[in-house]
Each structure stands twice: as structure tokens, then as C-alpha cells.
Length: 466
Image 1 (cartoon, rainbow, N blue to C red):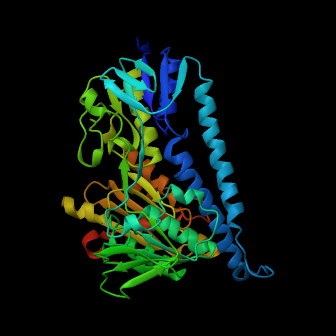
Image 2 (tube, one colour; image 1 turned 90 degrees about the vertical axis):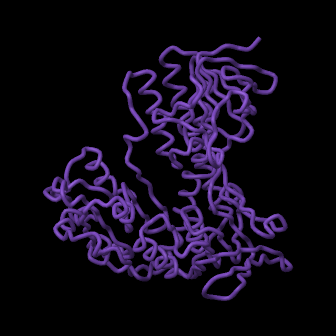
Image 3 (cartoon, rainbow, N blue to C red; image 1 turned 60 degrees about the vertical axis):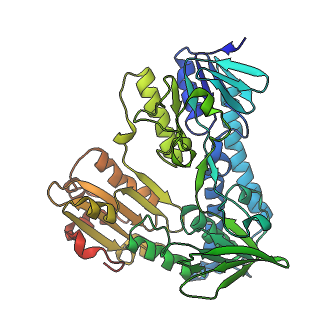
């Protein structure tokens, strides 16, 4: 006989544990299933460990620049990768242990460790145990895609997950993929001391961003000595002694890149292929993502999909917001929806990129008359004082209503500054609200009201130098 619960939660990423807490506090008996490490991608292989590594890389970078600030550092800067990894492991481990202990000591919550597989729309098997519940929540996350490119099966390669085990310095890291994960690791390891080459199939880095953003990011990375190879239409990997050779069919540059290690950073895929979803009748769409509606319900009544596995977002904050949406609908009689949220995210190179709302290209494609304001970081006093003047900020607004449609802040604190714009967007207030605000000096944020004095038609400012 199956063990009955009021709810079953599969996976302990950002949505699952918090949902377990809300359901248990509401008096429900909850079963939580985890087959690996508690905390999901963010805690173990994503946000927390990678941003800890970014912090170590930033420290090394600033130590090398100390002379620019009148500070003498004796001798060459040396990075101890074992200590860097140990610091990362300690911080990540504390978070992982915290999630595990919280769940295992939560009243009315039972934790099962093992692989969960659906037996029916109401039953899940975990090893020898069968669990049953009228509500099942899937929060299984995702993993790195291993692309089907020539030679990939004949070489050792790294992914964002296996990079967490690296306690040495690659002499030359080849990064296949010029988007968020690849660029963060690329800059990080360049600052640790590796030679780095980024290989991207598109004609520019982070191609989902606007051309001016892509161009500025490329400039930042190349300024630090990172080689960028674009338009790599055909990539093939092979061994040459102890080296790895990447053949790249690019418009410019040599046809080969020879390195010591290769990182595959070409995308993510959901962990849905071994859940037995077909036995529950749960619909799966393109790429293996579970099909979920605006309130994260699947096509099967009583089953929800949260986090990276539903294709409705690929970030820790979207996963947590999934929890908030589901909890609000189930427990608070508050009909929250995925479509209520404004896209927002950051790219954690240094300086970071903070993004909210639509890109320029998306606004233009929608046909709305729009205005844009833009300011280079060289004209931001705070950035000059910090010696971090690469990048720019811009805001796009509706020409008729004054509604803020999108923003990009590439510069010091860009990942924080963007929230002053994001909150006004959620309030559905016009840009003039920020324009009339008094911001603190000296900050990056203080230039946003001033920048908004210089709005001009968007179509005239879409080039990288616009």
C-alpha cells in the first residue's frame, strides 16, 4: 500500500523547499523527494558557488590593478586555486546543509532520498517506497547540454557542474558558447591566470541582447586579454597529445584553437527524461520541458511544474517566483500568474549587466513608437572614482504613454541599479516618476534621472555606437 500524503514535492531547488514550508505550515502532510544534493542548481553548481568564484577572481583582478590606485603590492599576484575552491565549497556547503536540515526538521514533512518516478497521476515511486498524494509538484531543475558536435565523445570536457570540482589552473581554457555561463567562467578564469578563448557560433556574443550591449561586452572581455572567435559555424574537437584542439570555421582568425581544457556552455536541458511523466500523462513540449499554464498547472489536474523544468524561466528568481505563484493560488486565494512578472536578469561578468523588460529589438519588432536615453559609464562620476568606466546604461520608454519598456545597465552595480527601474515598471508608473526623483550622490543610480532628460527616437539609436 502506498504511503499517503497531502502533497509530494519532487526536487529541492529554489521552489520546492519554500513550497514545502508553506504547505506544512498550512497543516498538510508533505513528502519531499531529492535524488542528489539538496538545494538544486543555485546552491550547488549555479549562483552561489559561481558568484563566490567571481568574487575571488575580482579580488585577484583588483590586486593586479592596485598600482592604479596608489597602492603598492609587493611581488606578483598569485592565485591558489585550492584555497579558492575550498572557500567556494564552504559557502556552497553551508547553503546546501541549511536547506537539508530545514526540510529534515520541518514539522509534517518527510524527506525521501532517491530517484522519483511517476507510477500514475497520483503515485510516485522512490526506491522501494510508493507515495500517493492528490497534489504533486515537480521541481527537478536542469543540466548542461552536451552538444552533438564532432569529436565531443573523444575528449574530456567540462560543464558548469564539473567546473565546481576544478582546483587547478587550466593553462588555456577554450569556452564553447559565448553567452551567460560561458562568459562568466571565461572572465573568471582569465583573472585567475588562464589563457581563455571564447568560441561562439553566432555573429556576436550574448546574441539575445542588443547589438550595443554585445559589442560593449566583447570590448570588456578583449580588454582583459580574452580571445573571442565569432561566426564559428562548424566546431570540431579532437586530442593532440595532452592538448585539445577546437577546429573553428570562422570568418576571421586561424582555423584551430589549441588549449588545455574545454568548457561546454551551449545551453541547458530539463531533468525530465527519467521521471516517468508518460505514466502520469503529463504533457512534455519541445526540449523536454513540462508544459505548464499561466499558474504553473500541467495538463493533468493536481500536478504542477515549477522552476527550470517548465521552460517559463531559467533563473533562481523565476523559480522562487514560481513557488510564490503556486502558493498564492493554493493558499491565499490570490490569482497570481507567470505573465504578471517582468523579465529581469543579470550577467555576472565584471562589470555586470542588469536587464529588465524588453530589448530594443523587441520593442522595435512590436511596432510601438519609443524613445531611448543612453549614458556611457565614462560620464558617471561613481564609475570614474572606482576606475570602472566600461559599459553604459540605457532606458527605453513608450513615446505616447511614458511607460518604461526596458532597460540595460552595464557597469558598476548594474545588477543592483536595475531594480530602481524594475520597481517603477511594476508600479506601471511613467518614466517621469524617476525623472523627478532625487537620487543620492555619488552613485550610479543618480545618473538615471539626468539621463532621462536626453530621450530621443529609438530607431535613431540602435547601432553599437548609438
